[in-house]
Image (cartoon, rainbow, N blue to C red):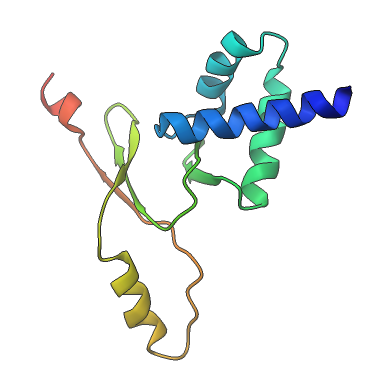
Length: 127
């Protein structure tokens, strides 16, 4: 019975990360998950996020002391607001082209990247 609960918790974490696409912190995710699974602990959320990010199931975005998690493991760029801290995806079609150019040097084999732009988001600019 305990193993089923473990699998259910992990599936719920992944489902929420993929559904929300808002690059949540562990605390933000925990608050959302508690509404669906009241007995889930903060430790369980932290532990599973670390395990899944190390396994490549999700991405961990680390900036200063704040970690955020992304359910989308495909190559893509991020934007982080320097004012509110919000992180979101930037759709940029050139990522594959960049990989091809760098790989063409024959000295590299790119298997992934983590590129993050910083600035002020439109919500902060408009407030």
